[in-house]
Length: 249
Image (cartoon, rainbow, N blue to C red; front, top):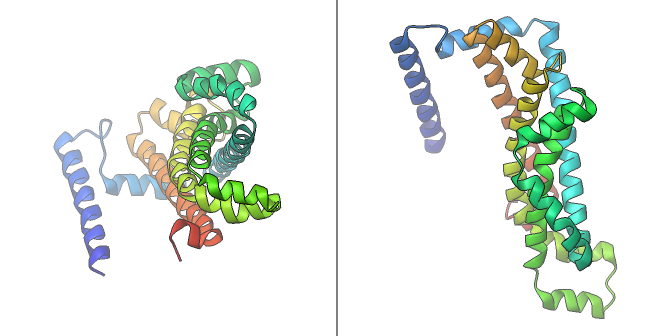
């Protein structure tokens, strides 16, 4: 209870600081307070385009996140088992990790257009995170356990369930925590740049064009809430599937 009260107090303090700063600015184009932001959000809720934009962006970003996660984990296992494959993948993953996201967004616009841009961008951002952290986790496994599994011819499914996943669970969870937020940031940024109609990014851009700061912050609040809720649900499912491996019960 004390922890909850403290968290509520911290949030209330930040909201009060936000409101005070908006009053100090006294310019609705530069900054509006939380009350105006919530009012703008309530104005968006009855609009059908708001919900369709929400659904389109959610579907693309989540699909990009899931595809990037699955591909990163699967290819990391392959790179761990096949050294040559890992060496071939290394320059590609390094490029994905270091090249600015904006470059990939512009290239994707040239190749595919704005359709599916958020999915592609989320995939590109998430893949190297899961690949590198999974590979690191696999490299930290106890070699004696690996040798024992090979000597006793333990089936691949049992190895995954009893050796690999327990050993890399903490690496996966840490990667997911980072990748979930980054997938939303990069996906919405791609929508803003690509101007795909009927998306959250397009809503942000229209608010900017109209100098409607309240609506811009309302869309931002929506992104934060959706990203936060999806992260909590996804990690809760992860912990439920692997409770003893992540330290949660």
